[in-house]
Length: 117
Length: 109
Image (cartoon, rainbow over all chains, first blue to last red):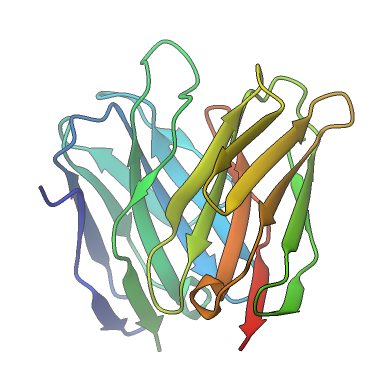
């Protein structure tokens, strides 16, 4: 039982390059999330998907796009990377109902450490 | 808007002492309050949570208390050990979970 799997674990990009961060969960969770974590800033929500087929913006969505490919997979795309996007990215999933705010904790992936030079 | 304030940002205690971290939130509709522990270089992990229909919950050496009237909730760690050293995050849930900025706990042996 892998939980939440993120790839890659490390990535270095040049300014302007694009890339997709992959996330998959095997817990049959409805809801999935992308967060970024910067030193001293805690965890900030980029995008989330309350259920398969829906996605919504979080606190810091600019410069990112997401795709909920199916119930298991939720990807995050950087179309034109900028140094300000240097961060650690965490994917998470949660049980919950598609018709209301989830009332359960998150299971996080192991993170992707992204550096944009 | 929704936010959560967490205090203190850094906490240093002697092994065996207690540690208390407090969070204050603004969204009256919040009904679920989890706490996460993040060790250096690792992912955050859920350690305890509380729902709004109870005032306190315990799990061995950790406990969480909730005061919905005052809109604050606290994490209590008793008999601290060096392995409790980590960053602790509070959060509150709606569709968009909002995290506190974190408390770095140091337990000195």
